[in-house]
Image (cartoon, rainbow, N blue to C red):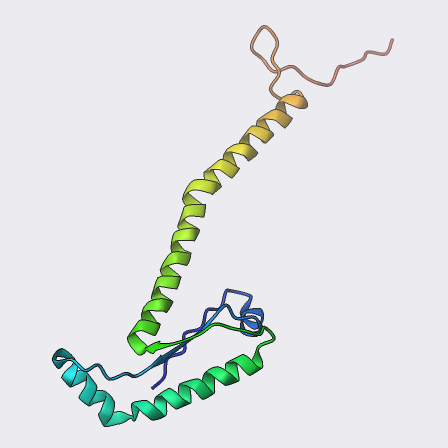
Length: 144
């Protein structure tokens, strides 16, 4: 009953395991408030929170030993909080992607479109004579 969310990017999983940005350990915790009585009883019925906390430290140490990066920030928190960190990280990433798609792609496409128009003009495809017809960039030569 541990929750260790991974923060792996697509096609970068090996690198992200060797150089993790952080290790988040979600462990069951007992909250001493009356509204958490039922949840606390459920946790105690299936596991010992102290043993789970020790197991989380052991597993986090194994993750650190398997990484090349040193001094990896490791945070221990409740399972719900660890899941929230993962969900917030995914939401932030989705917002960044949406920002790129909505704001930057039209700018890039506009630049590409203007370049295409420029090159078409350069090779004479859009030059017109006084009649409004396109000029033929190739001149015919007659041989007598």
